[in-house]
Length: 124
Ligand code: 5GP
Ligand code: ZN
Image 1 (tube, rainbow, N blue to C red):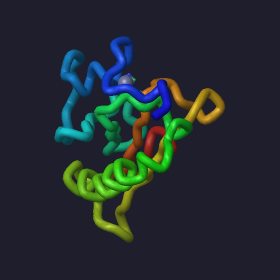
Image 2: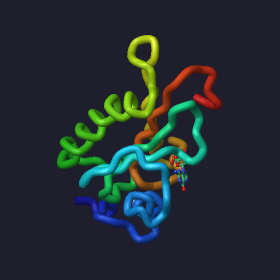
Image 3: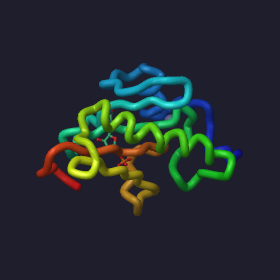
Image 4: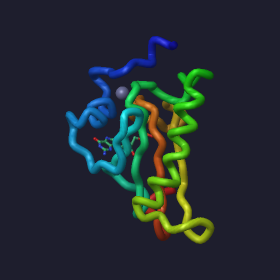
């Protein structure tokens, strides 16, 4: 496993949010994942899903993470519906994951943005 992948990174904002050391509006919490509302939403529904394990970005994913990333993706439609995204195909949602500086990533703990709800949106 890459040394960049850790159970918990002491200086990481999203590790602290997942550990509830920093408050957030919680969407989902189990052993493996945490989901919470984005503090600066682009859309009527905008939340983030993170693995509790500290993985900086998609760039560190290896074959051993395939099961984890699959489970993370299957959470997306479940939580999108829970948070009020309208049903497919008239409704739906957008899934975004920014990777690295040129990919627009600001917080270096792997996260999926899930955005939805009626348009127009602030961005996206
Ligand atoms: P990135 O640019 O890394 O893909 O996205 C980071 C996201 O985290 C941004 O959309 C930003 O609004 C959100 N964010 C940054 N700091 C906080 C925080 O303290 N709490 C919450 N809930 N979201 C945050
Ligand atoms: Zn972290």
